[in-house]
Length: 363
Image (cartoon, rainbow, N blue to C red; front, side, top):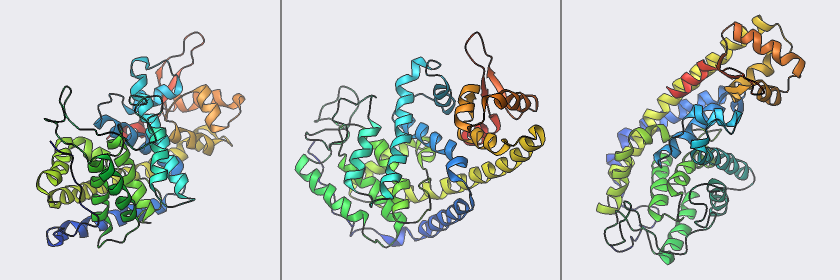
């Protein structure tokens, strides 16, 4: 199989008539979601669990087994999930890389330079960290099942000179105003996967770019629109519709799949975000009424940022004095605001969970 020659962007052959029905719905869905985001007073607190869940699901598409709970428990005690340590670090790196991208974009527009920096973070100390992290590939690669060769590969990305040319064109397209920004995002994501510029981590990197592109285009106020939930549940359709571009040269199936993903996921994200906002207000009253503490709001925020924790973590993240931590946690346990998921033994502290938040995020 020969290396693929990617289309130049923008795609001149898009059949816009076949997309009109989904374009309107997708844009309305994103606008409703962004409106809700703008009403969130402290997104860093309230949306923290959704960021972690996105990292879990995007990594799961690539074969990791770690769950949201595994990751959160590991952050409490790095020995708790020893057998999943590699998977968990892939998830944590994803979350760090996404945040790094946002911070970098506050100083400069989205670019290949930022993407390479994020890729270095994504691959640090995990599977693929020997495959030249942070640099575009210098050799030919191919996609196929284990043991396959270039001759019988599922897909052979562009040769290195064509790849560099396509990347330069792709970067210019990031700053181009196409007819519809969500169709443009579908093209941006697919073209990145087709170019396959890294030796490893292309799938995760391409999915990190989804919220960052929307943030770059000022479609959302915070880069927190995640699609990996939908893509993971429709994994074979995801790969097949991408492959349809390189097999047939037609972009229609892929763009329709992607716009539908945005519509479905936006509705789900709206529902989850509303439930999280409502839970925050409910639990705020619970904590104030149960503890009568001056630290009630610090306590509340800590539960949302770190819904699985030990007393030591809680003290560190909330900034609440040690003398008050034991009394607060005891009151919240008795009130069933939090539950103990692992009893303390010897020098090992008890581990608590804020289960109502976890059930919303996992739903």
